[in-house]
Amino acid sequence: MKILNTLSVIVLVLMALGCNKADVPVNSNELTGKWKLVGANWGLPDGDVEVKNGHELFFHADGTFQKLKYNGCQNGNYRLTDSSIIFDYDCATKSTMLSEGVQEDYYSLTNGLLHLTPSYLNCAEGCTDSYKKIAD
Image (cartoon, rainbow, N blue to C red):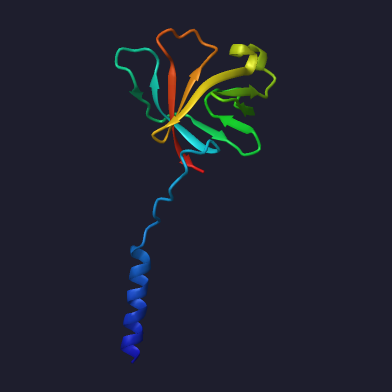
């Protein structure tokens, strides 16, 4: 009986060690959460270009955001319209930013990606950043 108990413990330990954390699915149709830049299309002939080590963008349920792209100004409030997200940066240097720190990006959620196109840049050829949701 002692051998059976010992074998049972060994089997349970091996089973526990063999388990790995399964990927937790994220709701990519919901804006709130953590997004990572994975692609960009800035009017180049190649179209969408894969971005490695892209910056992260957080949308919080309380209407605040963090865009870890700029060195100085990264936080603020956001609000949604039917087709755009308005980012209102909250920092002392926002007046030196494009559109004085209040930036409107047109957005769409398609195929699990968040596409942002700035309205404040003159991009006749189209300028779009694509983000993949990595956490809710």
